[in-house]
Amino acid sequence: MQLHDVRVYLSKAVLKREDQLAWKIAGVAADRVPIDKDVAEMIINRIIDNVSVAIAAINRRPPTTARDMALGHPRREGATVFGVPASKRVSPEWAAWANGTAVRELDMHDTFLAADYSHPADNIPPILAVAQTMGKSGRDLIRGIATGYEIQIDLVRAICLHKHKIDHIAHLCPAQAAGIGTVLGLKQEIIYQAVQQAVHVSFTTRQSRKGEISSWKAFAPAHAGKLAVEAVDRAMRGEGAPSPVYEGEDSVIAWMLDGPDAHYQVPLPEPGEAKRAILESYTKEHSAEYQAQAIIDLAFRLRERIPDLEQIERLVLHTSHHTHNVIGTGANDPQKMDPKASRETLDHSIMYIFAVALQDGRWHHVDSYTPRRASRPDTVRLWHKIETREDPEWTRRYHSTDPNELAFGGRVEVFMNDGSRIEEEVAVANAHPRGAKPFARPDYIKKFQVLTDGIISNREANRFLDAVQDLSRLPTGELAALNVAVPAGALAEGKPGIF
Image 1 (spheres, rainbow, N blue to C red):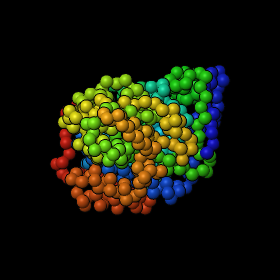
Image 2: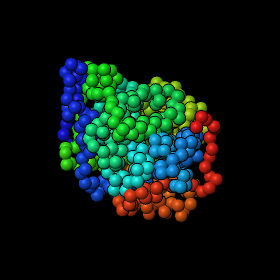
Image 3: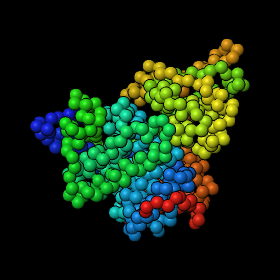
């Protein structure tokens, strides 16, 4: 990997194109390096993962709304929509919108955390939609997805958006554009313009993940994907972009990030170097914010040591800055303690999640969030006994560049009514590559089977699993095999709109 210095330049300095971050990103996307076998296998795992969570959410309101909107934009040689028969196609930007929303709805696919936060599998829906529309092969798709993961993860390693209250899709959209550029085999110049357009239109605030969190949390990455498809389309037609989009004196770094004195070092693969970033990301076993994964596993372990939860006086979770300030009591969001809060808010409340996991000894993507479950009196009592505190050591490990130290968990102290105290800690989730039970292909398949059970037929499930595991051999024009349809009449319909 090569580190690239990125800072703000006055317009009169005339920063050469070759020195701009967007040009270097485009260079990585245009570099036709071979894909390592373990990377290709992990891409297959993440496609399985995406389809699992998308089908599990297929009839929830946001995916239904997004799907209905997409179906208002039919295109005979277009892209498929999850849940809908592959014979019915739509324009690729709308397929990206529908499928991206379905994938994101349950907050249960993969994650990468460093200087900022990301769900890099959000790259897959727009890249797949364009690949289907343009008649590309399984190998082309693998190459495009490898690029999307690489660019987003490299940006997340170096540039923090959260401290400026910018939503993480600002790193996602240029990665999606770069991945589409790779899958189409575009020249560096075209990808460069598309990446800059994608950056320019995708900077939004983190209010989407603050306070009363709405369904826009699911739509936001899909919106980025739609913008990315449109950006590449415009660039292919010869349209340019604001430039330099990162380094300009009136651009995103100067006014939305660290300001005129900013200095970042962004790692990118050198020419000819394999794109392997996907192997540093990790999926979710539980349907909740990633920082909750290890804490849920911690609760499962802890409950075996506490026979009567009513005897708990209070619980203190010592954890990282992010967990404390985003999903813990440090966020100062009263909604995170409210039994009437939305599902989107509850899955960003570590206090609620810890209480339910401690009581139930299981976590379910539907049952654990129902209004009835959230309002149970004994749950509310336990929930309101929980507080979080930032621990500098957990914060340091959260940001560590040493993979053996990197941690997203915490230590809990349980103070009992009789004056005794119980402690337990977990550094990483069980499913993490360094966890107690790292996820492998059989786990991804099991997750798919559990989440899609009763929604799709066994025949459709087996057909999809056969096709996706043979992805590198899928010929041009056959990527519709990666779609999964539900039985006729099983799709919900939403409220009417404009489309």
